[in-house]
Image 1 (cartoon, one colour):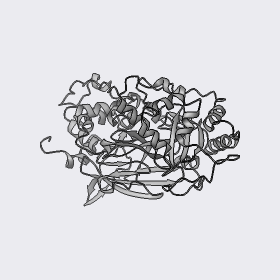
Image 2 (cartoon, rainbow, N blue to C red):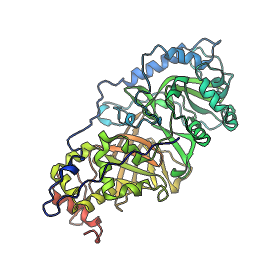
Image 3 (cartoon, rainbow, N blue to C red):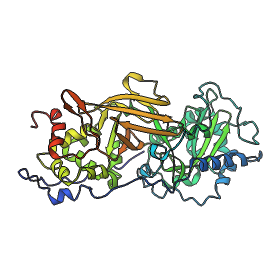
Image 4 (tube, rainbow, N blue to C red):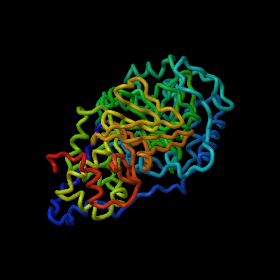
Length: 469
């Protein structure tokens, strides 16, 4: 698909070197007074979502109608309004920052919720053992179900233009998962996409693995049939979430009908098309209310060009501090970092948040040494990621059922996980990552204590080039 690259924030005036007094034009662009804090009170509970999904499956009992039609008609009673935030290009970056609970351990008390069990991914020939209550054995392929439904006529007409995709969705070598946009979802897609882009768009709705509802509810990202060159031709992924919209894909497309089984897999109907995402820095630009300070910092240090140049890296992980994270540093530290004298330290600080060539999702890990093997195991997983600062981050991922917590350096918890990007993944932080300092030959990690300008310089100086100093 075609994306309009966001206009970058204008470069601010140079701050005073002698007194490090912040220029008002610059400081007005540093959003250190705003904050976004996740709100969980209004979200549906997991049990409510599961009950709703099971109820929908149990009600699909009329054998004379197309399974998609039955499922969509059951969902039609909902007053949910979809696609309100999706712009002309179809990608809804803002939805990534909507409140959701499956990545935050503070909302979970007691033993982990286990959820329905479906075992490991199924890669063999399709099986037809479970079809919901009252279901007959399916006798149509995924393609046939789509082509015969009155709610997916637009999708079917697009698929028909690609014989290889028709063959794929009729194939019986494995169980596929297809996220099928219903007709009204196509009101928000670009009209000038090329044939090649449309094919990528279609493949982005297909997973070569089997994800019925129970597995969807305990997954966070899933691979698609769309191979992304900027990820080393690894599968681009979809993000699965439970939030204010209910069960969603990529945070903005709501699953409105589930477990529509065919002879070669399962269909989940969705109310918005899934658009392959833009680059990570472009996503930040779509979200000035949360990342305007980070974007300004990337522009001023020149790092934004390096991050955008996908010829220099294969995938990557960006730990993105929010405007609120910069606010926590206080006005004096911000004034220093955004001064001409502090710019070299700001650049070093930002480099500590960027991991090139290694893309770490909450449940998958892409890097050059593991091509073809990407899963992050359940339970506790540890990995050290080398940043652009040439200092590694210590990452611990805790996965229990649908709950995921990612901790960095034993202190900082990722606030919002799995912002899927074309060239990697973004994890949002409400604290900046501060490099450790050496005390008596022992590295001491930052644990959230208040930082002065001098202490921040002490922590960053070993990594700032002599030319800069």
